[in-house]
Image (cartoon, rainbow, N blue to C red; front, side):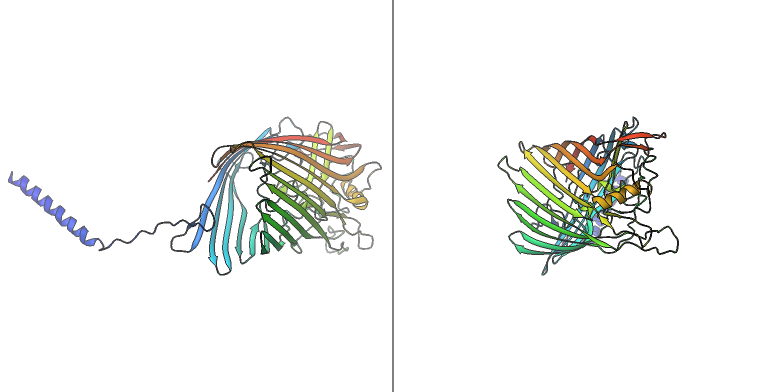
Length: 498
């Protein structure tokens, strides 16, 4: 019994000693915890980075897409290859999962707000990645300070609502529409009451340079044997004679942004150049066409809160370009097609080209200058809210490109393997008409389920037949009838924002 008492007393004494030692190690006064503080200067979601006067917002979205009879971005099958040739074993649907993350920081300074912004996309697309693969893309990464914008941002040519068009697709032709940003150096002056003006220099690659054709470098065999080749990377198709960047595009705009909506007027200057007339002759300077300047102009407006309902809006944009075709046929769809549209279905064939210009000749003595293309488009978007949870949009566009009589002859000669085309072939004038609709349901805040349908009409002006081996279509050559084509595609999407 004495032994048990001794053990108990010894243990208690040990606990007392241990407690006393720990108490002696504690500071006299606990250090105050530095809690995260809300920043209300720049809207909801911002908070102060602890220990600084910089506000930060972190957010993003998770989206799941399924495209039907179209590419992964709900783009029509209009750029040739297996999926564009009407094959039985083509992809009837495509799937994609994407995680979007953005980081936005702002600091008030004596020169105004210092802002940094970055937007990253983490994608997995069936048919492009392996089982556990994926890829990362950078849509935006820029710094804004004292009126300047440095880095990858929305082009100053595009209207304020460039990222708020009411559709899912990336394959809707809507003018410049470079929704993934363009590297630029811009300065914006604000005049009050929502009026501002901006001047910028912007990198023409990869979205602004449509390519230039040298008719002395044929990119197909004679007109009755093969279809023009298709590249795998932007502007690398056989026949493209636009090599190297000389100067950036010069872009300017004037904007009005108020509660009723907005107005936008933009203009751009775009340098166009080719290479030598005979670049394949090593060490020989056979002369080259003089560089020239193309241009583009655009006008757009947005009307908000229409009489048809709260939240309803109408957006309209029109663009004209001379020697700057990608300001009309813009967007992110074109990374593989490099400006070529082609649909082979049954015995029918439709194809056309989107280029800045074309030139020909074999030397400086008989070579031609660059014949620039002329392009224009108009697009419109109307969105109606049935109630706070349901909304439907209708959108349409018409885009056209023409090369004039001289450019048409040169382009047909290039397509025909360097041989003058036969009579009655027609014109390389080409147009795309599109109409679509999307309905979206938001059952709870920041969760949207939507479905979309698009009809596309490819309008070409070539006539007769074309004996061709279409890439991915089949091995046997047989004559195709040149005619217009209709395409249908759609998409469903689940989007969770946070």
